[in-house]
Image (cartoon, rainbow, N blue to C red; front, side, top):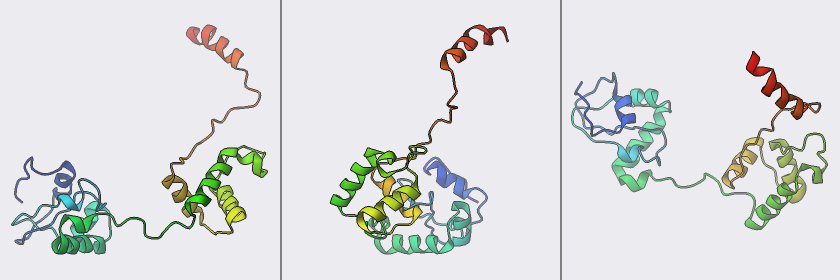
Length: 179
C-alpha cells in the first residue's frame, strides 16, 4: 500500500489503514455523512488506491449501497451532487401550529394536567400535538421535531424532597476535611 501523506484528512487516513487497494482511480470516503465537511466532497481520486465498496462501508459503518450511491453521485455531479437535499419529508406542523405548540410547551406540563413530575416527555408532547392539532407523530418523530426547533433533552436533577442544603454545607465544611 502506498504511504499516505499529509494531504489527507485525518479521518480518511484512518479509513485507509490496512486497506488493500486495486489498480483503478478511487473515490474514498472519510466520514459517513455526505454533507459533512470531510465527507464524500473530500473524496480523493488517486491512481492505484481503490478499496472495495465493502471495505469502505465496513470502515465507515454504513451500508454498501450508501457507498455505491455516493460514488455514483460524485462521478455524475461532483461536489454539488453530494450536498444534503434536506429532510426526507416535509414537517406536518405549519409555522403557525409550531408557534402555538411552542407556547404551550413553555406554559409547562402542569397546565396540561401533568402534576406529578413537571417534565415534558416525548410521549406527553406527542399526546399534546394530537390533542391540539389532531396530527399523529411517532415518539421518534416528536424527538426530531423538537430538536429541529431548538429544544433539547433536559434531565432533571434527582434530589430527595427531604434534602437539607444547610446540613450538607455544614457537613462539607466541618466533617469532610477531617475525613
